[in-house]
Image 1 (tube, helix red, strand yellow):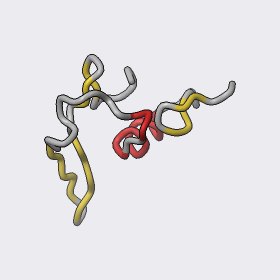
Image 2: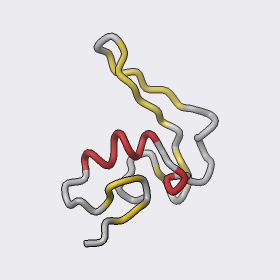
Image 3: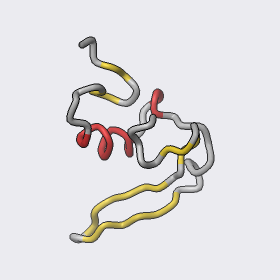
Length: 68
């Protein structure tokens, strides 16, 4: 997914983010890092970070395009 900052040439970078006690926590998750992108199966990073940032409405859920 070329719109995903966590994607590099088909593989996931494995960078996971969450807010905890008002702080941004970033870690590399070895279960995702350097493995094929799984956005079609469902990806919390893509759904929670990427989709809200897309202004053209191209995606409404991980890897699924709108009809229009």
